[in-house]
Image 1 (tube, rainbow, N blue to C red):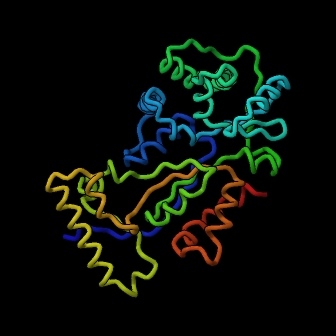
Image 2 (image 1 turned 120 degrees about the vertical axis):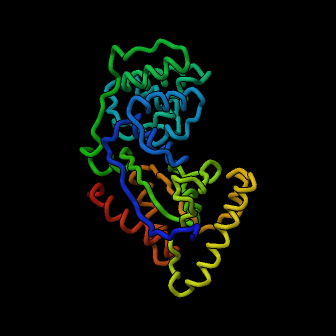
Image 3 (image 1 turned 180 degrees about the vertical axis):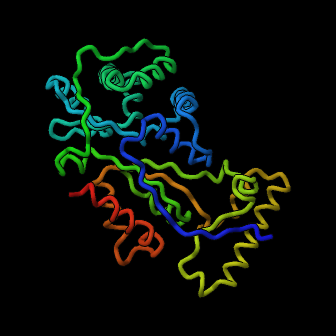
Length: 296
């Protein structure tokens, strides 16, 4: 029985109104290829992420507020934090930014972080209180007002609307994607995913190469040999993060990419150009077409 499968690339845009906790859990679970959990389970999971300072996954949920207090806007400008977007009278920031500011030893950063956290949901406030033994309550005087990013003018939307997309592609393409700097990424981990297990159909899965039909016999022979080698290493008690050394760029990878519309435009400009690699062009052209509805 063959120990490898071939699939095509695909994408899925995450709904903008996805619950913050469920979205963070969804993205984080992708790294380990864990199936979707209940909201209650996700609360405990995200609480652990915060407690263990695994903040990278918290970058995938971004809040947008209208600044309704000019004094607070002045404070934000003085803080000059590169992870807070301030444009006109709006502010956007990730959950990671709010928590890292709150836990900072710098007094101004801590003050701003506390204000940002206190404007978030009660579930998030409770998580922060639990993780850091604090007693934050909701902000009595609201300095910020929640904004629907879809209703913003286009110039503001470009900066404050963050879109998460799940991409199924090969690891060669993900190597190109993670070169973009204004993004958050959550990629399937070959360190922790053991592809000999049932949930991976006991097989390695590859993205069909663009010239597969021209070289089918050669590709099949290589994929079969690689899969057999990987399975043999696991059989010999090698752990996945060592056995992965034999895995190639064609291996299927699931990755979430989160960034604002400006950065998506930059990605599309580079990665759908005629001189871009065929794999990444074919993957991202449909994403560009789907996100076009937010650019008008």
